[in-house]
Amino acid sequence: QAFLGEIASANPTLNAYVEVTGEKALAQARASDAKLAKGEGGDLEGAPLGIKDLFCTEGVQTTAGSNMLRGFVPPYESTVTANLWRDGAVMLGKLNMDEFAMGSANETSAFGPVVNPWKAQGDDAQLTPGGSSGGSASAVAANLCLAATASDTGGSIRQPAAFTGTVGIKPTYGRASRFGMVAFASSLDQAGPITKTVKDSAILLKSMCSFDTKDSTSLDVPTPDWAASVGQSVKGLRIGVPAEYLIDGMPEEIKKLWEQGVEWLKAAGCEIVQISLPHTKYALPTYYIVAPAEASSNLARYDGMRFGHRAEEFTSLDDLYAASRAEGFGKEVQRRLTIGAYVLSAGFYDAYYVRALKVRRRIAEDFDNVWGKVDAILTPSTPSAAFKLGDKQIDPLTMYLNDVFTVTTNLAGLPGISVPAGLDSKGLPLGLQIIGKALDEDTVFKVAGAIE
Ligand code: GLN
Image (cartoon, rainbow, N blue to C red; front, side, top):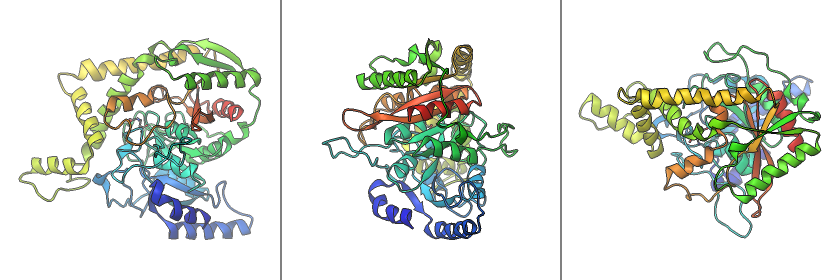
């Protein structure tokens, strides 16, 4: 009831929820109350969550922020959300996001932008909560849910978490099932939670992850009790600081934040090791070839015949496809699909797509080469604090630069967390990122706990 009240008063301004499932929430909450009264119930019994609108929810509209999917009511549940309901969580509603998760400011949504509950001191301008999981981050930060699900293809969990003073983790690729998640770029997409604390993050992630035969890339590995690692000593852990993340034009405040993080970990007994990840500079261009290529293949299904919005006026079958896609997809999605089709086309496949896959391998090898020397890596989460809504809209390339510190872990399949690490001079939250070895979320959570 309390969360539904908060949503009713703040959502008209924040636009974090695209649909509120109040009755469903109260019914689930009553069932949880009954279980708890009998001393029963799961790890998340009665916990009210928001769900990013790319997780299919049975009987509840799922749009991925797109007019292409407006009115789509899935007849099945995603594995991640099914796991949460199994453990007793309550669904408050579906959260706004960039269209098909393509964006870094939540400005590409067909439902309009999400507003960050934070404001710069002395400035009333509305700020972006980041993207693509902007609705999830804004809702958690503004207390419109206890925690939220999100997804991360190139930073969409960690960047919004950094912009809103919340915690966001992308687990190792394959830990969370992609079954029932609207696909963007299948070799990069992973689900994860956005929460208020590192401990909540560990508890939520454990519930979300499972081996799933319905996702061919799902890993058949046990899911540890990560919450037990939060608060444990980090004494003796070796923390890598990669030289290449000190990018040209990095704002002084971000440099200071990073140095501060190093000092905190030193004081907690960690050994700081300078490392090199030499192919980092190729990560963004590689991501912006691989992700659009996979998107153009994944989104080919939305043709107005098999799936998605169908245009009413057309002259031929080809015209129906073209008109449906032109009406259903927004500008950013069309831009990505055009790039993707181009880099996969016969004349350019080897020059762009195949080359990008080779560079992707080099980026992953950079990490393999340092794991003998370090246990985890510390970097800033983003190159800036939250910016004004509308600020970067005119220039897609400037927008893509937001992902400079986050895309590397998606390309390499590694776990990464963004943890709040203080405020900038305008009073806006900043985040630090901890990257871990494949399947070593344990160390990631330990180090995050030490920074929190
Ligand atoms: N901002 C990145 C993009 O636009 C990442 C998005 C994501 O992680 N879903 O592609």
